[in-house]
Image 1 (spheres, one colour):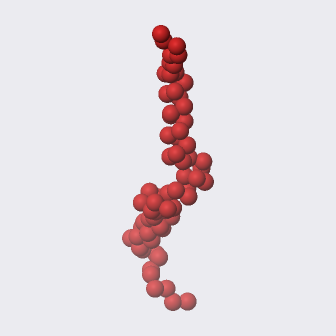
Image 2 (cartoon, one colour; image 1 turned 45 degrees about the horizontal axis):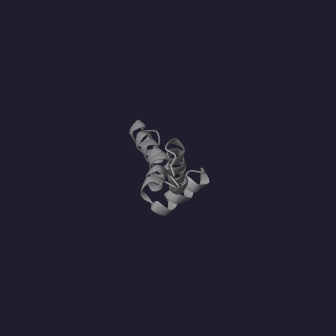
Image 3 (cartoon, helix red, strand yellow; image 1 turned 180 degrees about the horizontal axis):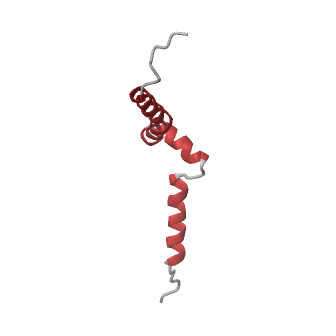
Length: 74
């Protein structure tokens, strides 16, 4: 079998390891962070959505500061 890359060399092994780490770890992470449609799908998959978080904050604030209604003032 003909080898195109000499894998006996430590330098070539290091280059290949760097390429594999970039492909397996950095590329998916950057895709999730930068691609809006993929990010939305991932957030839904983990059960984290912006709209749900915002609505929870509103209910927390309304429970802390209840509104006072005054009827029949005079």
